[in-house]
Image 1: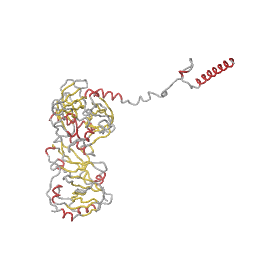
Image 2: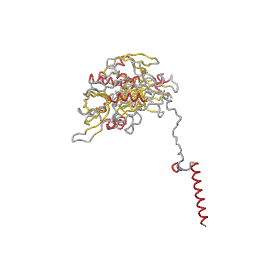
Image 3: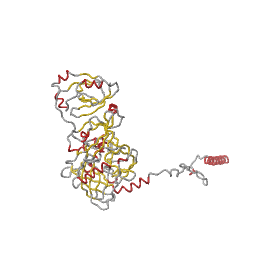
Image 4: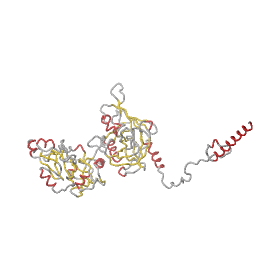
Length: 513
């Protein structure tokens, strides 16, 4: 009995030993459990056949990024602002739309005994050995006289004085007194192209993140995003995907040759943080503004006396221009450079100096970079021909406003006007003559009132608008309209000059029904 028991034990032991050896050979148990003396499994990760030198002939951008960053970082400063909320521009603080673009505008701090104080911060770039620093107007506009402090890359701190502000471009110049100040080189923003690499430097979010460098490309040029809030505001932004956050405002946008090509001004954000779109003011415009502020204490900006509108496909078709080309002249200031040169309402501006233009912001930026007295060349499209003009710029304040009032010559009553209404099928509207009071209100002595829309959602016509021209021909009667429309087929386009209830003139393109 005992011999059988011991025999069974031996058989089980032999079986376990044979099984263990077999499992090790089959890699069914971890190496750590393998018998001593067995080689552990060799582990190989990654592609060992990959040639790590195969891309050596392709230029690595890293050394250039490093070199540009090292050279430019000392020229970028951190700006702290304190000031009174009284008299500051509350537009940015209280308006959700503006907050999407200017989340770093100074915020109200807790009251300290007196009226509430505002605290804010931003960035700037040193542009002269005399200590002049370029930044944004919205960074410093609320500052008290002694409410601006500048901290340099080397941690030196200076009080700064405000030299001047220009709300129409969102630029400002401040000055510090210091020795051995690093100065940034300024480039040529006109040479920028979509796709160019750029670097943004600034102090996003807080001073703890000072001297932050981000990189991206120029993603668009000539952006007008409607944030200046002034009819004469100049917006011709460089759009970039280099990360820009609150606190970056006023810092430089830098090209890969190491020169500043823009001043970071705004972001497009629904959260207050970076979401992929930043906007910078072209340095060519910023340089002109800074020079004027330093030398004259104000900006002497050239003015042509033109109200402009960007083209849409229908207006382009009506004028016989390729889509996306040119800028429409909406209205002209009486006695201004444009009128004196012979430019007319309904003309299309094709080129200013040597630059082809397709947006009002492009024209504004080019003109604004000139001074009163400078001459500017324009190529105009009129009646299917290119015409050359030369304008002598003036100061804006030397001219009146757009549109002038004319004496009323219309019908005496609304009943008389209603009795003479007529339907114009090719435009899909009912029209009627103006009364005398309407002529005064709309500042015109010609035109027909849009009384009813027969084609719902048709083009840009609406009840209450007055048609004063069709294809640049004056409209006094329905016959004047029909004379032009008789030459048009369905699908053709016409250019209408209209008047709004506030007396402003506009051009719209309308497709024939």
